[in-house]
Image (cartoon, rainbow, N blue to C red):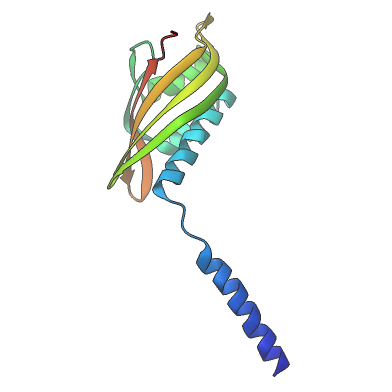
Length: 147
């Protein structure tokens, strides 16, 4: 009888702990994905792009150049674009069903074709849920002008 009581007590304790844990919200999920992107560009790890960017995704960089997924990955792999650090802040996530708009600011240190591009950039990115997975379909970066 004593063993049955102990088993029931453990089940209630661990069952209530598991019940108290909630699934990660869409907002938290997208914030984590964006942080993965920021970490990946610093490490020059394009596997994150392969994982979260739709094959027909479009990127507009802070200089106004429009690229597809393959061109963006190639720019990093070639070493033309090197990001030493990228810090995200002021992130907002707006959910519209299976579409999410994420906006945030980065403070970056890096070079493009050997030229310093360090500074702040405002990003707006669109994600769509495809086959149960959030995929980026568009990204737009705008340089923040210094006052």
